[in-house]
Length: 201
Image: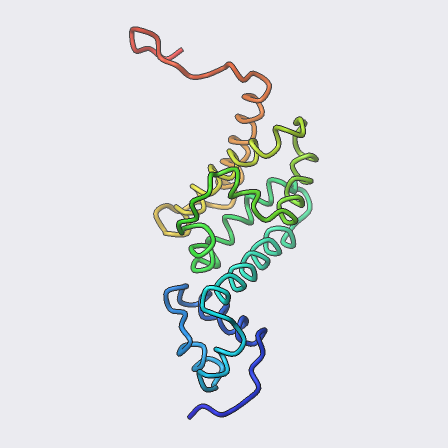
């Protein structure tokens, strides 16, 4: 039987985070929150104007956790921007439900708008790109967007168990893509096209 206890907004968000982390956003409800907090449903209504407000704040909390995961789990000997990609894939492996919530839902955003929508956190990633790649300021977002799309493909395949990759294979794939994009930056007209005979050139 639920007992009457003082329920704060942070308590609700923490409980919601754990529910989504374990079972996904579709499992989140006021009833599940009340069960998790061992309280009545009514106090939950008092802390948020509506469900949309709670979900928005929860999404922000999950994003903050995600960026902390990316930037805190660094090791020596590997370029830091490369480690961002590695940690992105690790996040997809270890936090599948949170990954699905952040990156496998309809946002209506273009790719470049999506990767840079969290201004402050994106700026931290941008700093690491500047260390790893000699790019013009105006080219950084486009470069990162292309790198992110490639990395996201690997993350989704690995998280869903579609393919299995070793840590070394993941690192090699990220290195190949990084080098390919850098070559394209240096020679933007070097495009893979077909001639009239259907041969690659």
